[in-house]
Length: 375
Ligand SMILES: CC(C)(COP(=O)(O)OP(=O)(O)OC[C@H]1O[C@@H](n2cnc3c(N)ncnc32)[C@H](O)[C@@H]1OP(=O)(O)O)[C@@H](O)C(=O)NCCC(=O)NCCS
Image (cartoon, rainbow, N blue to C red):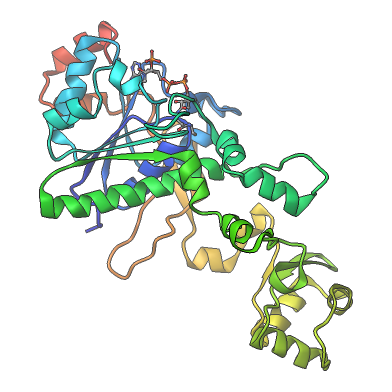
């Protein structure tokens, strides 16, 4: 039994932020029905395509059911409304207004199913002067101040810096999960659903400690790689290590190991590292209680015994691609096992399962919908 067993999610999401949210919901056992336009959602075409399949789409949509549904056709809308009655959560990340234009705004969804939890993720939320603006990850990184903080940290004289791992999507996607789980809990008490409005810009701002340094101390955080004591990055014989020498017992034990009375300079720490291998530095510092990590390349992370022991890479069996490795599920529990090893659905793969088995349409009606461009 997994925590979201029995929870059915109607997933209209596309690109990254929304699909990441529903990937985790699926990983915790929810039945996620991904609704796509007939041509598929935009990430199906994100290059490079291998045998017609996008790595980005595969990563984000594992373990979901795939249904094509033309929401610009009244019959498609009717099918969607029938599904809303059978679901617990509806989630979308269109630009604000798209759901209203389809006649599927919050009031309508609530009328169809008072217990429905409706979560939207958008660039700037459903109210505020920027509410109508569209957004992608770099826009969230830019408008939250994140890319300026990264610039100051990495090269104050250079251009703004963008994190390559789409954190402007990931953080809002994870924030949306928290909102949905809270709403599911609240529904147990009220028996009512609710509307959740997640803005990428809000979700980013809310996680940035730099604002507190800025307003409270009129300074910047500077925690990444440039300081010895917080997170010093050091070149060693065969690569890089990063370790933190925070004031107190961690710095004390490093100084005791060096046999010095005063805190070492960056140069002295570099000299200590000089000539040692990455593994040697990691072993010595671990032993004396200094937090240290080797800087690993992706193939090293995959080969790492620790990541293996934590099942952080799983084998996915895909009907077109065969088997390949993807990241595993990061929430570990003694009571249940999260699973993100299912393949992403092919376009419309579960049309019949959902329309026939769940909604009770006859197979010939499903064929007619297919021939007439509704699914
Ligand atoms: C990502 C984004 C920029 C893409 O913009 P876009 O491609 O112009 O798409 P929009 O969201 O504005 O609109 C989607 C359209 O597809 C239509 N559509 C979606 N699903 C459909 C379906 N199953 N059948 C028919 N039409 C469908 C919508 O009705 C809408 O049409 P309309 O504009 O005629 O009303 C925009 O969706 C956005 O800003 N989203 C919020 C922020 C976000 O999550 N960004 C991505 C982070 S990875």
